[in-house]
Image (cartoon, rainbow, N blue to C red):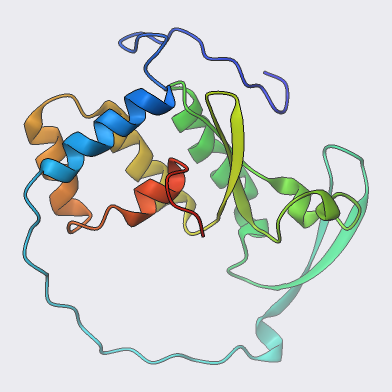
Length: 179
């Protein structure tokens, strides 16, 4: 599939109009009707450790679009060290028919002028492309997969319990709210 693919294909179990803005809005409305769970207690037994010079690493990124090599000085927790994992997670959502990509132009010194300061997801719904600030590839992709595959009331109830009644991240990923 080429970079920037924006076609909707029939996926087993999903009608071809499943990923329209109207249909996604209807699914979100169903989710919002699910009972909101009580807040869960949270532990605050950690402290922030500032980055140390020895935590900074050098990473060379070669842009798959223009071929430019960009050197990044990043922490060991940077998305750059997990690109393959993030691409695979996004692919698992695209396999369901939802168009989402990690916008890698933000890592390129030449291409980054074309996109918001990143890292960001590039999402297309109904031929409308928008960007959502990257949060966590695993959490974002798991949230989208659970939402898109929800069919029964119990699926929506379980998802609402998991997100603790807060649909704001999902609304951003669906282009309803903006960062």
